[in-house]
Image (tube, rainbow, N blue to C red; front, top):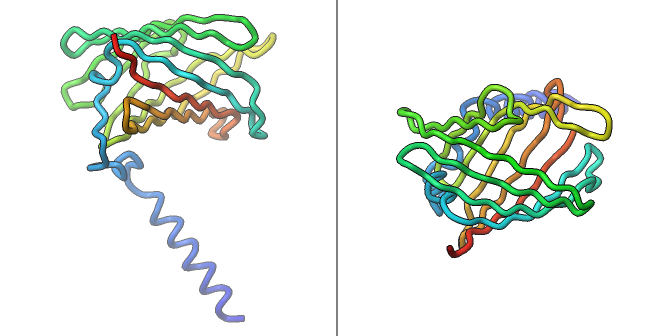
Length: 178
């Protein structure tokens, strides 16, 4: 019986030690190397789903994107076509900052999105008012992307309200030849 409290203490110590540091640092040195300016330059095709807190798919969509860069400032234009027939357009302005991080703005993003890259990973955080039926929810996005081979990028977003994940977004992107 004395081993159970010891096991619990060891488990808690392991959990607490894994909470330290910047999670994106875990991807330092992983390949292929992610470069926001390189990946989001030119045409990209994407497919995505939104899942509710139960894991049920509540929305599916396709996206066509085009990115253009002038130095450290880029424009990413996204055209969403939802499977229910609705459409949406978002235009991002993205800037690479002197410290190597990024910031982005779009008309439906509150304040600014902040992002960084390490190895094959990119992380963005931002707040957006998301309309659902007749209600609008202010959600915090914790947006993770991993660059894969063959021009594929996998995007997982965790949409949070009061720090609790209420929805998840998954997008698969693929660079297209111009």
